[in-house]
Image 1 (spheres, rainbow, N blue to C red):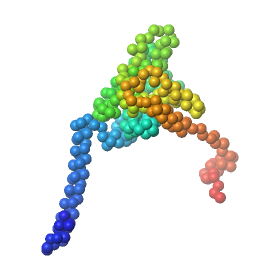
Image 2: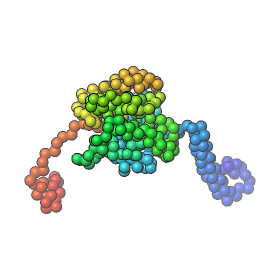
Image 3: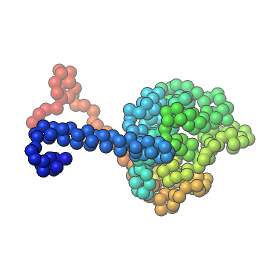
Length: 298
């Protein structure tokens, strides 16, 4: 428009203002129209866009905010699982953003009964709500976080690609703790009463989150020595392979080796040793009592 204005004779200076205004309106309008069409097409074709995933990854999302306030242990577990899954996904060429967001929301069903999950039993000496319950009832409560999570995901309109992580991160595994308790107590438990409904992981991202979730739980409860961390990661992966949990997705043995390496490196960074600080010297304590800075400036 400015070029054509230069060829006009005579030229009116006021036309430059109209040209600038028109260019600004057209520029902003085309951007808004382009973004709007992109969002509408993604919604109509049921495609999860990067914009949606980035919005879901924000800690201000209502579900993540609820998780942080009502189930803080689950929230921090999910954040660590997300970090593990993202790094592993990068290592094997999977969708790192989808893996991270799926990990953030995989346990949202625990919001229904947060106090029944060990990571949220934060008060020292508080009674365990599972004490006195039969193992099959405890297993039913634990398994319910999957169905409760799917209900919450639909309520908050999470995209299908993110919802899929909720049932798939446990696959068709047993709630092994309570199943083994039942066997130890001399019962004859029906495995169907202790088994998640599934399905097994259908994508590499879901398989990564399954492994990250299991490894985080096992290592948090165990020894944090590097050799013990390596052994725990290898044991979890071998157990999931033996159970056939990866039969429905295209995870290769090379992928699993790369995933194991990233997990081990991340866990070593999380549980690295720290030096013990010596006790304050008498001079420091006296300085603090006088309201002075205990460290002398040179």
